Amino acid sequence: MKRFNDDYTIGDIMKEFIKESKLEQGLDVVQVKELWASLMGPTISNYTTQIDFYKNTLYVTLSSAVLKQELLLGKQKIITLLNKELQKNVVKELVFR
Image 1 (cartoon, rainbow, N blue to C red):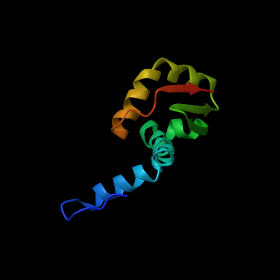
Image 2: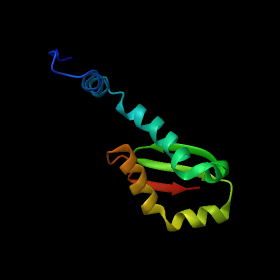
Image 3: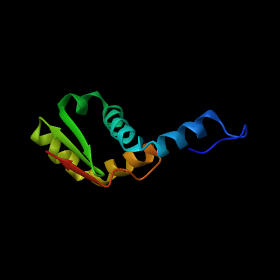
């Protein structure tokens, strides 16, 4: 690990530590799951039964077939919104089950 001077902030040091410790993927999984609930709102979150994030693909299991069809129409917009909130291009594909 690099040695830092006094010119770096705690945030910069933590980002470097996360990157070198290879914890970034695990944090991305947690952030994507939390973002789904906050961005989609309580109504859609109530119909969401399971969320999995694996290899840049977000798998969302829904209990409503009608909601699934509605969300399929705005799939690319949802991907763009998630990546914008994460401030990096993490979600490449979105699959509704």
